Length: 249
Image (cartoon, rainbow, N blue to C red):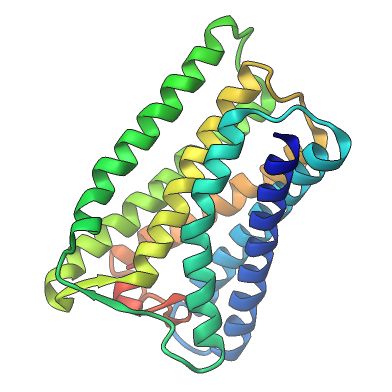
């Protein structure tokens, strides 16, 4: 268990650092375009706080024998595919290729996503509440993870609303936008699980993670404010994270 949890977290952490590097390069290349500094810098901050979070936890679990929870493994593994899709698309864009795909219509797997996501979240909550029955109370790292979960859920809702709003005009769905939606949606569930594990003392208090998570909450607040402003028409979406009209607002 420890090896699997440590390896999955290290892989996800490296993926976030790669994403942050890619977006930072795009940020420098396109800094004159509307919205670049607001959206790009905030997304870079998210990636460069999520990456150290998962790397730190992965090293502690994999090499320092910190206890690993079962929700930890499941939520990390579920978070890898949407992150991998989005990183792949950003790598494509970085080398001058498409950087996005239009999914025409509404295929069955997209129709099934809301049900699957709801079932997944319900299972995580059920298992987590089961662990928390003997809980002594919410801890500092649990509070930080809960705050992150709420902020990431807010970002995911903004992206979901934008995808729905643009579906008719586009005749389908942006894969880049779905990747972002999945990335932040799975992050919200993951941090909910972390909060429940910390509260039930499956995880011990880790000052390194607490320090990183404080910065992560600030980055998430910034990013949520940026994407909400974009959807209100305060500024245009930055094309460096996919199609401007489809990826986020």
